[in-house]
Amino acid sequence: MAEIIGVRFKNVGKVYYFDPNGQQINTGEKVIVETSRGIECGEVALANREVPDSEVVSPLKPVIRIANEDDLKKIRDNEEKSKDAFALCSKKILEHKLDMKLVDAEYTFDNNKILFYFTADGRVDFRELVKDLASVFRTRIELRQIGVRDESKMLGGLGICGRPFCCSTFLGEFQPVSIKMAKEQSLSLNPTKISGTCGRLMCCLKYEQDVYEQLLRATPKNGALVECPDGRGTVIDVNLLTGMLKIRLDKNPDAAPRTYHKKEVRVLKDAVIKVDKKELKELSSLEE
Image 1 (cartoon, rainbow, N blue to C red):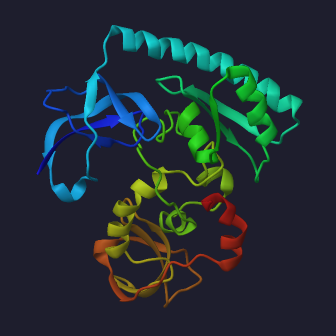
Image 2: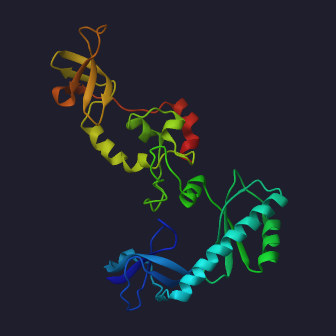
Image 3: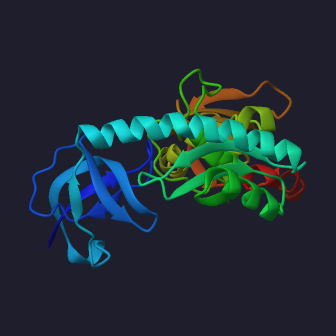
């Protein structure tokens, strides 16, 4: 077993393990640690605890110190300088006529590097821009292209549900989301209904999927052949959450379908939920 603390460097970002170096460090405290980017300040997300050695990438780097007032002042100063760097970089992008959108600028804690995050439709030749920025700031410059999901996570905002974005409030890492999930959750395959502000499939489709998979195992699907109190019929509509089914009876197919609870019917031959190839092709960009 290894004693660790978990540290985040961004809001709702990935948690990295560090050696507490004999110190008892509480959740929410700021610590100074060495990372691949240099000396950084992060927030403790997991207080001292022991984890199996198999979960640790050795050797663990030790915590240098708990952040003091000078460190916190430096962070605030860096945030102010980052705003100025963002404004200047935006101006330089226009001057170089580059097809890219600047999302954020960030000074590393030790001021050895400035990172600029941007989105673009394809590859961008920003070599001249980097040279220009380096001549102004006199430090290392890194331009990092990110995806539209990462942009939403950084900037935050409100989703169509009226709540803050899941990615910027509690989802630490993005998980793959598929059109099939939307289909299995009986959602309309209308891009405006199933995509978030980022233009990709809503993240909530993923973490609700387990519940829907459980319900699907216990509920006849559209097209299933069933035996119900009034005879055999075909399921034409399903409400997974309530378990109510609309069934067209074989003995009177032209009559209005009847409604039954799934507990009232016996499945003779279940159906399979499929995504039409044409639909999949049209909506594939939402999965990227």
